[in-house]
Length: 297
Image (cartoon, rainbow, N blue to C red; front, side):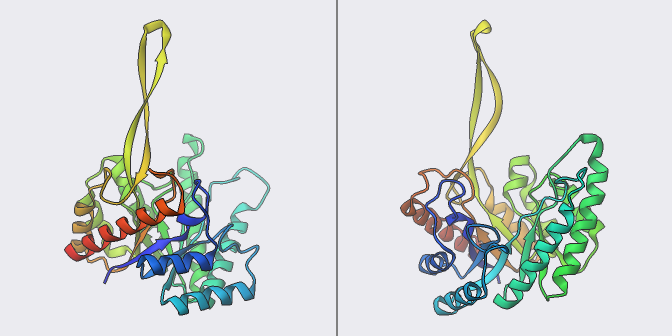
């Protein structure tokens, strides 16, 4: 059974949204009709530096009172960060994941989302690849010690394409590292959404949805009295109103046997702005679309 959840980054204020605290967000998600939540594992929400035992208890109590499932921690890693430095950034990030796993166990959270790494020098692509493999594998082991699963999201540059992502998971080859394959990346790449979803579905524990419209950009060249085409930007819109072929994606998920969490997030500039009213309207409309997609699936 696919379960709709809401990502707390939508109310973290990081993209100009009106912010809510963690317990306020849990109450909001319940009021909107989401079955569970994905909690942002950094400030201003659940930071391993700041969170206290009392706050952990309050989060668990808020979930119990509202009937909302604490499904996933959204961890933030970048294993190509500082690779040439004497600073042990890998150890810091693995320790971060280990601490998240300890908190997750106390909250009953099942999954910690992580990333690979952003691209560095093209000449370092395969060293970066091997480095990320080792770090992700170590995170999987650290989380397994607490009975928590690692979910790798197709977001950062290393292994971000569909073929590279599947290859990366194969090479990690750890039973505690699962796929968190999202449709917005292959959609922006122009991939076959149904085929990609069908391919990854058997390995997935979650997908995270966001939808976008393309906004073409241009640069004026006075000497030519003309414009040069630049890379498009995108703007987030409610699910079903943008460029993603979500019907094809969910058809592929069904064909591949996916049975897990379906998260919605508002984590980039949003059409209509970041007011609480617009966030609520967008989250409600997107939940309606998720329910429609799950029903069709």
